[in-house]
Image (cartoon, rainbow, N blue to C red):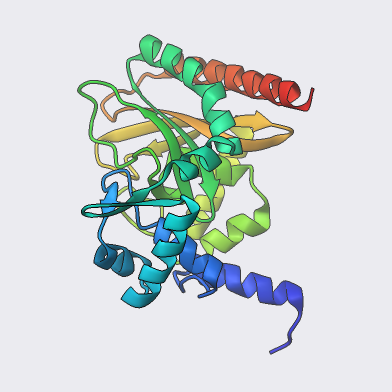
Length: 269
């Protein structure tokens, strides 16, 4: 095999997208350990961390001890939890700036629409949810804050794929595409046609593709000339007239984009 740098990097990316696992470097092991925590499980035992990170127990103990010394983890009676240093680092991320710019407009849209809202970014073949404001009595949604879903199954994912680099999209479409409902799009050709429509209209729909009885509209949030995030509005599939919801969603995304640009100008100044 030719040892061209570009080809090597692409091979690693393809392996990760296809579920081939992370390279076992020290940094990758640290992140695998940290990724073991979830919004539902704040404290984990050493055994649970080792299983979640797919690491030997001795390696997990060594990495966890290092993170405790650095403030990344805190040792508690039942195991380990994330330390305040992780929160401080996360608060300096671009995603935290995005969240700050978006949350007020999301709350206003929630009061107006009385539907469930999501804020998400694209990360590899998945979308990562940064915020969710749930509506009372709405159908169950598989999305959760800090959780991930396959991008091709969601409105936010499809709208971000539509405006992403074509090579990155083709890499996603080259892997086996998960099905969650009878309406899930799993044929690359069908998805390509859907993405072309989204690029033309500027809005994506999820018609019970991620969860039964749940429909979604999603639009991009633009920042420095790219679709940096997406905002979605979810409602029961029984709702068939949603032009007013679409207009309100577009207006909220535009307001978030302006707030995000204003915050960026303040940071530069």
